[in-house]
Length: 121
Image (cartoon, rainbow, N blue to C red; front, side, top):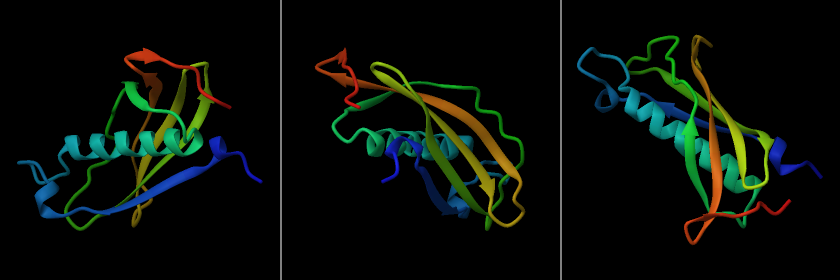
């Protein structure tokens, strides 16, 4: 049986006109929201009993523009695990051109009653 912390998760998104900014490319806020969702999913599926909150994201540097009609694949996977948190790699590719859109990481912390809580392994 595979270790759930080694699983790669994937989301495919069609970029619709309502996701675009005034310059005609993807509004960064949508991509950041999807990245946060994917980090949460990877952490929560690896540690089903945990209650995760996002502690931080690494630099979010867009490497290629995303336009209406593009299809984006967003990936996430657990990179490392600490006592109360885990580091999640998150990245996105343009499914048609295979161009990297961004690559970053998130730190997700297990919290109960407002306090950091150890992860059950």
